[in-house]
Every structure is written in C-alpha cells, then in structure tokens.
Picture 1 (cartoon, protein in one colour):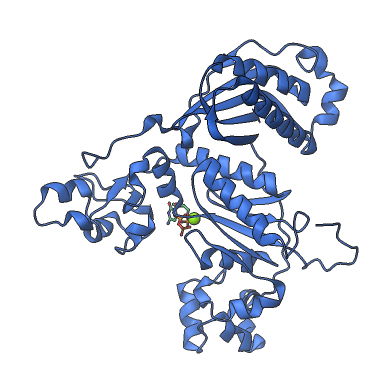
Picture 2 (cartoon, rainbow, N blue to C red):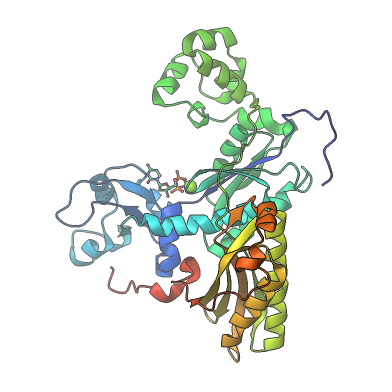
Length: 414
Ligand code: DCP
Ligand code: MG
C-alpha cells in the first residue's frame, strides 16, 4: 500500500486480467446445479431437424471430448452426443454423452453485471473488454508482496457471491496479465512479478501473443520462431520489415514490454455488499445489525465513487438457497446514507421470524459524477434526503444466479 512517489515510471503498474472459466456454461450451471461436473455444451442448432449452428462454449468436461468454441454443432454432436439421444440409442455410450443448452444472452449479461460490480469494488480502474473479461489497474490498491492475497479475495468473492469462477493473471502490463490469466485455467491465479516476466514469457507459444493469428503464426514458424522466447532472440528489423508496426509490437510484447495504460471502460450498474452468517439465524437484532453495517458500507462506497442511487434494496437468503430480494425506488437520485439505513430496516421487517443464512444490501439505478450538481439542484426538495421515498415496493424479478427456484431436474436427461 502507500502513495506512489513522483517520478515512478509509467510502466511500473500492477495489472490484473480476469476471465471467467467457460463462462456461458458456468452461467447455465447456476440455474441448473445438476449440470455441475457434467460435459456441457452451450450453443445453437442441436435440436433435431436443425443442422446449422455453432458451439458458443463447452465446459472443461466437454472439452475433454474435443468440443470447443466456434466448432460446428454437428461436429460437436459427433464427438459428444446428446445425453437424451444416448439414453435411447443402444449404439451410443451414455458415459460418453453430454448436455446441450441454448444461448441465453440476457441471463449471461446479468451474471456478468454481478461480476463486474465486484471487480469495480476492488479496483478504481476497470476496463471491461467482453462479457467475461476485464483488466484492472490495481497499482494503487495493493503491492507486489500482497497482490496474490488481494486477487484471491476477488476470486473468492466472485465464486461465493456470483457462483462462477474467474481465472486471474497479474503482471506489470496488460499483455502479460492476459497471458497469465490463461496460463492455469480453469481456476487459475498466476502472478508474474516484474523480475520474472522474461522467464514467464519464454516458453509461451506465439499463438498466445496478442495479434498473432494462424497466418502470422505460420510465417513465424517458417522462420523458426515458435515461442515468445524465440521472438526475443529474433532480429527486430527483420520482424518490422515482415510485419510492419505489428512486428515491432510483437518484439516488444514477447519481452514483456507494453506501456499501454488501463483506460477505464464501463461503470457498475449497482453497488452491493453481502454477508453470510456462520449459522442461519432467526435473531432479528443480529440480522438488523448486519444489514445496517452493510448499508453503511454500500452508502460509503457510493459516496466515494460519486454515485447517486435511485433504488435501495435488500437480499435475504434463507436456507438452503432461497433468495428473496426487495427494493424501493425513490423519486429522485440521492446520496443519503441515513436514508439507505432507514429503507433497508423497513424492508427487513417483512422477514421477521425467518431463518436467515445470508443478507445483502444493494443500491442501483446509479448516476455518476452528479453529486455536486445534485446538491445545487436541491434534490432534497424533489424527493431526496428530506422527503420520504416512494411507497412503491418492487419485488425484483429474481436475483438470478443464486436463485435456485428455476432449477430444472435432469432426471429425464433434458
Ligand atoms: N463465445 C462465443 N463464441 C466464441 C467464443 C466465445 O459465443 N467463438 C462466448 C462464450 C464464452 C464467452 O464468449 O463462454 C467467453 O469467451 P471465452 O473465450 O472467455 O471462453 P470461455 O469463458 O467459455 O472459456 P475459458 O475458460 O477458456 O475462458
Ligand atoms: Mg472466459
């Protein structure tokens, strides 16, 4: 920890790259826990009568059969028949079959949002790059000595609160961090310290380097270049004359040189905190104390991020995994910790007498950077801190991933 001294090189960064493991498949497992540990393919075109379609992703169990992203679905089905077909076809081996599910982007987006929210909690600078991938500049949040523990905490929170698994790589720059996040998938955590960069990159195959497609890889191979280590030895001029700017980039990336700053992209849509009890409890005082502590933490974080919220909600998890969410929308965006506490206390009364396993507080409908303006505008007069919130209590649809209510039985191989 500690402030950076002036004059520190701009390249002296701690960058993390997080990428979820078999993301769509992990999402499907959230609402169908029976798919856990099974070969699972997410894609389109596998229903009978269909022939067109591709694999979006495959669980690691399905990858063991040779199924992979972007493969034609017919090829996937030949490597790994559908379980329901194997169950009735004596020529197929049920042990060598798998489950197929269609793509449901809206659901994956909602899970992605929960992951992003956690990432935004841990790093001030987050660059969201795809539905399951982001870079974090954590230079100000940790040190090289503590970074492994720091990243462990992020991984644990994503696992516990969202239910998917992130592989995370840490390095002094973006391109190496990305390679590190991939290096020990699934469930990887690889930290490449600045002095280890060359050694770490040396055996990395050229295909793993950003910007190296099959054509470039073939050309490099023809020159006897197979790994990043070989690239380090290569002649820079030759690379530039062969590949132009890209050749220069390759030469740099292979020796762990990448000065790009992590520029932020994406803001969280909500801010929340959750906390589980060691044992489920019915003690309302204990529950309320915990909820109020979370409310304080969430409101404090919103203030720190210069975020105003229009919706305040709680999440109450009763054993085994029943997720109940309640929220109240205000007539205008506020930054008002006392109001957050009042609303959550009020929402909690409905759960008097319930056995509670876990509680959470969330503010959403966020607006950023408007704090100063809102003070001037005097939201207080139009529904902010001095007025009561609207009475409309929404029951939010579901709190998706942990909501097991949509669980489908696999007993009939469907
Ligand atoms: N995706 C897709 N079509 C592709 C590649 C990916 O629809 N050709 C979707 C499905 C993936 C998601 O994007 O779940 C994320 O892509 P990744 O490349 O990160 O792949 P996974 O997360 O599935 O697997 P991994 O564990 O290798 O990261
Ligand atoms: Mg992924």
